[in-house]
Image 1 (cartoon, rainbow, N blue to C red):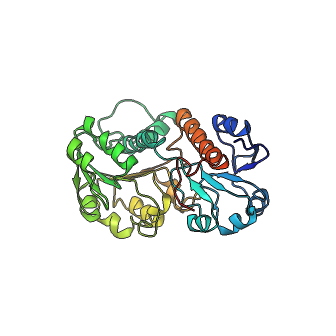
Image 2 (spheres, rainbow, N blue to C red; image 1 turned 45 degrees about the horizontal axis):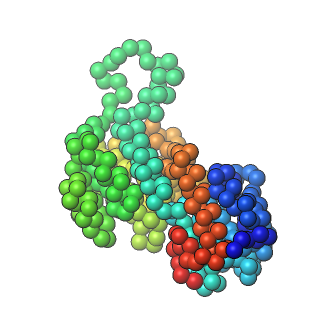
Image 3 (cartoon, rainbow, N blue to C red; image 1 turned 45 degrees about the vertical axis):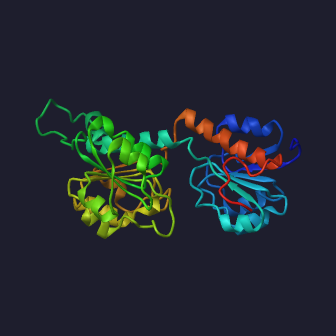
Length: 325
């Protein structure tokens, strides 16, 4: 069963690989500019659509669902997370919500390690130093950073991405601690990871990498108290969700050398940064690009499109449904 004449609204440009699949059998409108959709425009554009393909930046709440009308059948999020979608409201209105899990696991884990290495060895700071013409010759005390090999890695959240980050530690002979509601037996057997509570992890780790979903229990999981538990030589890495960290408390901790540094790819109030964050040398900040490889973004677009087409073709539940309407 085809879906000719059925409307799909895509809230931002995504790779052509997925759009090509949709355009073969659907009427597709994509917001031309890669920017946040103004609220009033979003409410207008979704009217009469059979599907909404959105990004984490667009809040799809009950008001949007009602504005779309009775034809709406699926909300396909172009992300693993879906805290921007009111899943309960969608379920109540008989609408599937889907995401793009698994496909970006390895790419995101790579990025966590890129941040880890970069902040530990002061790569960005050293690059700026060299470009500014400040490098006048080798020095025994110039831009000293922290070792990675043989240190302790603490992984908060041992799901797909957290486990992938932990597995990469083997080549660096690291001790791995992890904190999660459920034990990860594979991590324990294959790399000798030890499950501990969050406070123990924070106290004992040289690198703390955050990989939890955003929910009431994880908001500000890393706060002033948490940061004070960490070693003054420790580094904090976050490419999960920004609000997991109290960003103002982190700025204070970095400014006062309570911890050695941080690598952040997500922020509490994206795209805004907390005052003072961008001025600090002991933090690396990247613009939410953890899944940003050509291959992965193409796969995400295909997966999101496939979810849409499955619902519109009556093949339910779709491959990556997160609810049961």
